[in-house]
Length: 140
Ligand code: THU
Image (cartoon, rainbow, N blue to C red):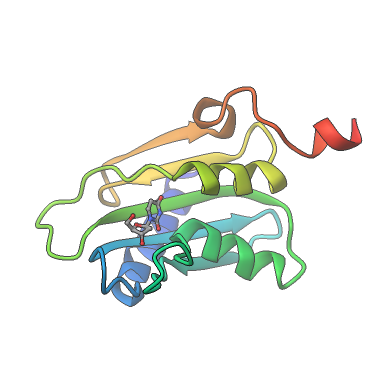
């Protein structure tokens, strides 16, 4: 992947942490999802007093895109950590978000986990969700 695109996605994901709604965990996550049509859909985590109704940053980004009838994606950048953290750690997507990625993404979908624009790791979807259950299991 082009480094400029990677840095751009990380920058947008980091920006989204500022609007995370996290009164309970104060763990702010931002995501920037690159669609195959070139558009970028951003997301933040949105918590809920019930806890279980919380939505992760990654799913917010996916659901924003799909609700605009965009369903093909090439990459997502994820930046997360405690709101007060001086330095971020790598924030990996939860299992539910990996499953949502599996619904819409091919094996070459890239998951960029970043501490900053310069410190990041890139994984493919099968690396983070091996032997995944997806649409192919239903439709063949
Ligand atoms: N969270 C995300 O938004 N994405 C992840 O990949 C991991 C966890 C959120 C959910 C919750 O608001 C907070 O982080 C703590 O679990």
